[in-house]
Image (tube, rainbow, N blue to C red; front, side, top):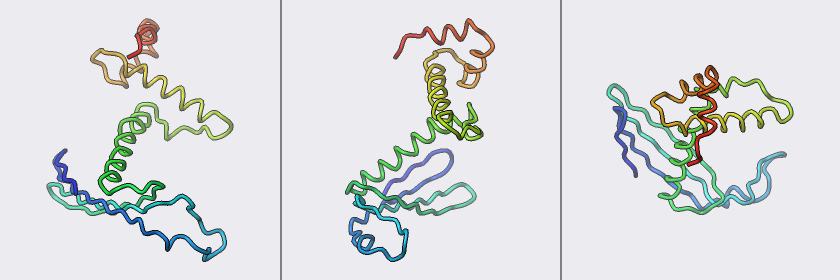
Length: 154
């Protein structure tokens, strides 16, 4: 069980791992039923989030091909959300990635590479501007863009 206190709320998480999954294997019960040949465990994470004025409870389920202990699964789940919040959220807010209409060919993959490249350039700058402001300044000022492009790698 993990307890975190942050942003004016208390979050209590409990992770349970079920490794006995033989009930998922065996003959198919209906045509087209999914099979998970490398499935090793089913994970449930219960989260109780207590704010100032309300309390919520949620259960999330995951499947894994690795027979991890509950503590390791909890760490993996938290790491996944850390990546989601630090990368994907920034790409969506600063670059409006979720609004992109690119669907055909390699356009979506190519633009994802360009966005990651731009985000990494913007993150390397050491001035006091926000990521969004640095990106806008790079678009407006060719000298600032050249400065971002010439920064040495970390």
